[in-house]
Image 1 (cartoon, rainbow, N blue to C red):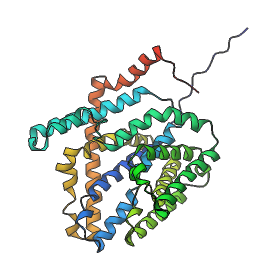
Image 2 (cartoon, rainbow, N blue to C red):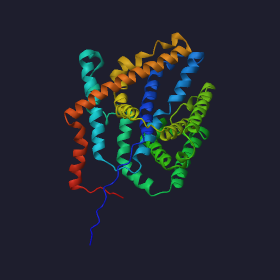
Image 3 (cartoon, rainbow, N blue to C red):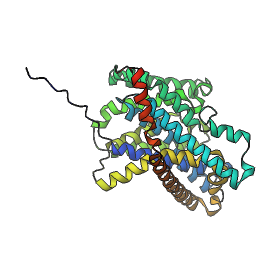
Length: 359
């Protein structure tokens, strides 16, 4: 009798549109942090104030996009302790390296607390998103099992119901859900956005029409967010606000539908995507932010609304590309020291003693 040979699993092809969104979202995060040094100086009126808030409204969905990307890409992917180790190594590399550089160049910036945060960045909340994301990685296996075993309709109803409850409680009933969700700066909110990303991957939205309808929906959501903010409603520019969530979902659908066929373009996208986390870890490092990121755009408002926005966008792009180059050097160093293999080595080691549930 002829023995059947089991075919090896086929590796799913990367959606390069989603990888491009990863890079674009990080660029928008840089824009937000440059805007952060402009808005406090404005008095609430004039073209500078209005245009900067328009950019803020357009970019504010970026963090939601990142969490949705995790759900979109993670749907069907195996949980891996090695990925957590890789994330920790990259984070620790930047916290220790940048703190050491500032200890030499600007010793007045560093103290014992700076070194304590550098040594244990996740536990001490050096980066809120990294700390929350580590928590998300712990619950991903459970989330994946749940996502896998419910229908797309049930998943959509669950997310829509949770979002409706949060919005009704916080923005209509006045219940302080901020204490639980921290305005979106929390593990609970990342979990909800992760589920949203998993739903979008299975949603019929990805199979209906082209990408441009999603872009129109994004523009409409941004316009509503900005319009409400201009009427004095400060709570609208918030990760948990409905139109900010809708903007993130629309962008995710738009980029998921993009077809990037050129081999050269795919290589560029892959390069930028691989360095996106490094951009975050560098430009928002507390010492780097104090000396560089937080100081770049302070003087831009004096040039008027349009030039202020233009200079902010160009400065964000320049800072983004500089950090991308720095992370490319970091990746080369990790390959040289074989640190890029540490995660896979950990997975192999654990697989000898533990059997992960494959579902």
